Image 1 (cartoon, rainbow, N blue to C red):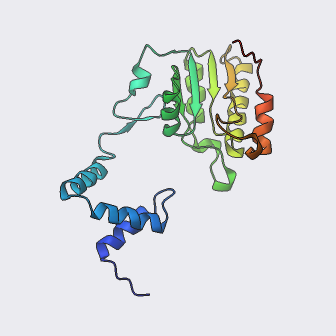
Image 2: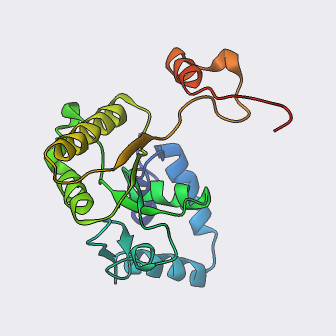
Image 3: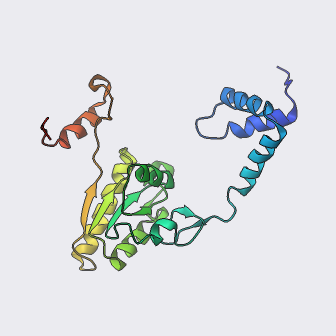
Length: 210
């Protein structure tokens, strides 16, 4: 079939289709949506793309993408300084901020995944351990994804933290894992076995009067 689309339209659709969750049909719809915008709006889009990575740094403390080093979270002395949550990606920080988490963060930059050739050395785990040894943290919250890779990452970190505690390099740190289970509004019949098992494991005392 002969391609009847102008080269610029074809190029934009091709680029958009490389984005996560964007297939060829959605890419085409987005491209034609953009074609219907005013010239000024398109220039604003283009400038936003050009400026996306300008003036950005990675926080040398928590490894969050930021405009300053240390980032605004690490600089904030009003946050709880002895509580650290370990996440996989910067987007996880945004989710926890919306949930009003008030401690500090450590971004690993991914999860252990042998099938994707991602080993512990490819993540910011050594930096995490060094940070724990140098800091005054009382609790480390493992907030990796509830997937096989996320669980493997959490187990590895737990093992490493326990190892250095046994070596006497640090002590008194409590390691916790975020609760996993049924989402609010979800139907029990559609939950998978693993989710149900974790929901049962994480059950707590209930009273309608509480």
